[in-house]
Image (tube, rainbow, N blue to C red; front, side, top):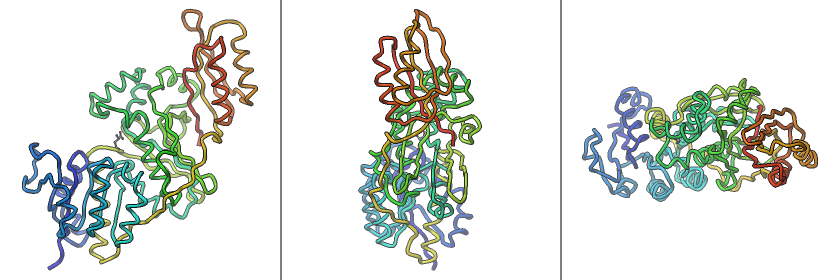
Length: 426
Ligand code: HSE
């Protein structure tokens, strides 16, 4: 009798239920595509008291009993976070199970070690759902685009922040109001830190950069700024100059190194990423042979992320059917990262000042001394004899801009440097 693939789920939250439903709803098509039947053997969860509309005998709170079960062939890890996911995934691989995971933090921090372990055992470890939800990004980077020298990638990789920034623009809302609305609609968590501070995007772009560069990027070498300092005022100024503000994860190859950064970014309205709004995600890639490519779609949610998990499961199932040794592609640790200080780009600066003679001259003097040239400028008067100077620079070095702003903020005519946003045109 032909083998039936036995699946164990670790976790059964938003992503797990989406994946499970897809296995149920599209069962016949999936069996046909794999060539083997499958069954969900066990589902590991924390709390058995919740009604989940699934045969209760499948559930267990003993997650180790899943990774140790000799009859389980494939473990689907959808718990998230490193602890206990790292230990359980490692145990599953050591016990000869293929693993599919949606866990970005796990792969960003331990991907190299775990994929090597999988490969050494002739097993699969796939993680398409870890980045961009339902959008196929990992497989195209590993396969179809792998022959390219990928010069640059820029991605909107977090739906929560993209929703907040879209609301701020469309409804001229403040950051805190847009965040509250995102929380009310279930797009942002009660503690939104991971999303709004760019931590989530940081994990995702470091995974993509690791695949493109062939070595794991250390998560703590990713430069990161969140969106909490972006204001509706900045969004309006950006629009007046033909730009939109997005939280981007950016990876650029610089010789043998890669610079990986996450920060609010002004992009021209004509850039394909500028029209990716709401909870949608997208990754724009420039490769030396393929040119510009963009992938977009739903970057989160039960069904889209479940779809990516099941796509990986099909890959694993086909390998099991073919009796192959797994298609995990290992990569080493130690990707060299290029320092942020050497970045050269253009900058949007909004500076609040005393509305008095010589203010503009004093600020210009500092910029001039640091070789920063202004390309465009707007000024307006604020109440109580205050003013605001808003400018776009020509290309300047990050270290020079930071040094200039450190001086500018202490000028007696300056109340504060309100916002600094980097501008990317391609
Ligand atoms: N918090 C993430 C987002 C979910 O907002 O996109 C998927 O990683």
